[in-house]
Image 1: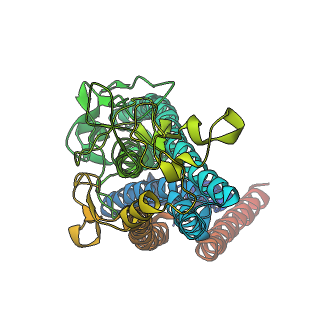
Image 2: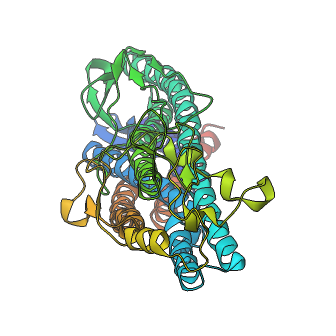
Length: 494
């Protein structure tokens, strides 16, 4: 080997080890960065010796696609579970202290006590107070359900804004990737930025990817709507400030196409947006419908015959803003929010609680005990029995698509219906909890598999750094040997 060849070899080693050590150092400094993909300096050997030809990025497209799918599914399931948790909290937690069924049970007991002592003003007042508690629980539950819908609506608006921002960031990163790829430059940093945005997008909406020339990427939603192609597609949503049982929420549009909501306790949704739509537009409204059916049942059960012109029956103990009696098996939207106990039996409002015993709670209602006999129990017996008798409820109250065997029977007593409503919610939440545990485990496995292939292993990087150090030492020895030889030649020449 000539001195020139030796010097060239040493120079090549120095160049290679410099690039390699820079790559390894960068890997080590990003060991804790989940959005960083490991790099490696690739060497090739030619007549001129070994040289770094490119910086290779440990990209695993198949594992990334699986991670994105798992991320979308888990985000959707966790969002659904959170919404169901909010609905459960309305009922007072595990013991359902504030549930209408709990207050209905107390009311039934107080009505029984009044039947036992029909001449007792205290017993009458106890029954009226318990009835007020039932009405208040329905009012509060209905308002809280609408608050859950309003909260979901606000979260949808926030998620849409975030999605549009992320799509803009994705566009910048994608343009940088295309430019670097076309010019032959290292696109690793731009690819990391694009992948980071992609992971965040997958948590909001399900996303499929297609790669074209120059590493250009196209994004579409899980149902096939284009989300990004060269430029971001606009995601639009108009938020509602106030919700009640009669208001329908607005859709989320991706490039003018409505995003479908998820369905089922193991939601079909991909990403948080579809689950938020499911909570706002399916689960909460159907729970509201069940509350409205309880309210309709109470008004119907405690109705009185009308002595004036008009309908055959008028509201009795329980009335509502509509002031009518709906005996058909069809829910009346928002009825639970306005149900109340008639003021004619509330002492503080100048009423007489004994009207519950005698009849004539409504101004045009029939008075069945006009002489106010203290031992009269006919009406109280009838009302108490009615609470345990089967009546027809709206069969559309359970969520469409929910297992019919675990839904709410449409021909049961109001007491059983109120209890079954809680059972429906609790089973839905239980199934969603199991599904959330499964999606969380799947995401964890996908994340681990992807990290194992693309993440930085400090032990491997430190070992590689030692190998680079040995190469550097070898080049130093060559350079020292050449230096000694040159000194010898100069000494001979002098």
